[in-house]
Amino acid sequence: MLSLPSFDNQRLIFHAARQTLRKAEMARLAVREWLNQHDCELEEWKRKTASELGISISRLEQKLLASAQHQAITSKGDDDANSEDNSV
Image 1 (tube, rainbow, N blue to C red):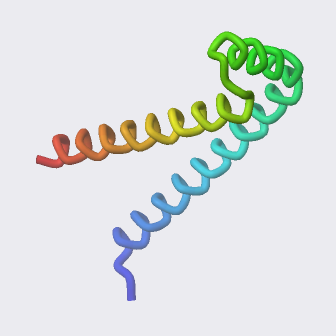
Image 2: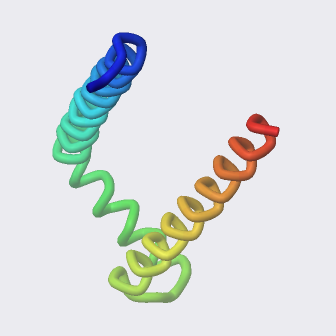
Image 3: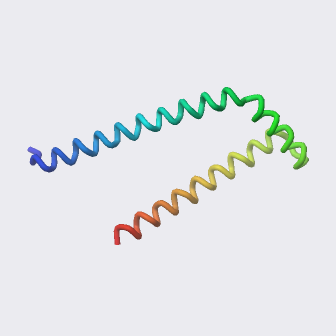
């Protein structure tokens, strides 16, 4: 059986996680709407940038994806290092 403080902590953690998911879903919908509204501009930017770099649009998209993945990994590593520093 859970003690009352333990139950309260679990309830607060669940509530925070639910709020985080709700906010993430709202952000996802907002980004999707923005992308849909600016699709033509993004396609034009990709075409122009690929032309300036002398590569195909698909190659540019691959480079952008690889860069975003690298940035996400680096950012996650920084977050992990910061959480370790804070816990010491």
